Length: 198
Image (tube, rainbow, N blue to C red; front, side, top):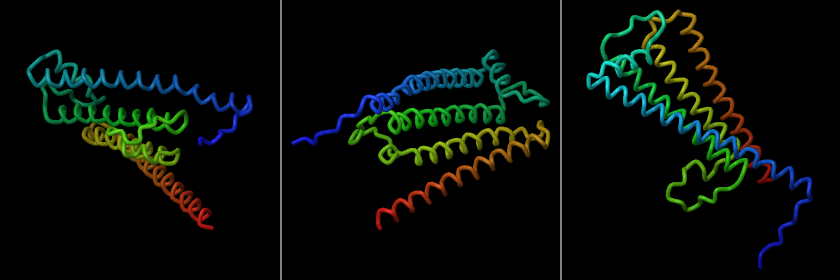
């Protein structure tokens, strides 16, 4: 015998249904993901082309990793390859961030996906909530920031000391923000467990 679910009054029902207004936003992020996939393959194709001796691909790669006030390389060297690969990793990490926002946000704020038991269900999705999502997003942003900071340090001699200090300070601010979010989430979880035990 199934439980009878109380029917919502018209106004609460209308307000609750407004969550579906977020659906076009998640579809838009999926389209942004498609743009990142295209960008990744263009960069990878140029890197492979430059390695094979294609001059046009080499020029595109050099322009892509060019740093102001730095001497542009005339051939594909280790530093150029490293910068291009870091750029590809950056795209992948941003893409991972998009996946977390799309799937986690939809599951948390719009509707259940009912993926329990699905072999490809992400491990983190089984216990996702707004707090977990915020912490994971903060960690992903730190990863992206680390890649950008590493790219800057590879060409440190081309940057002013103020730029290096500013980027490092911003990265530390991201780290402290993530720690604050994780600590707040831990306090909230502990308070929730204590209130349930009493």
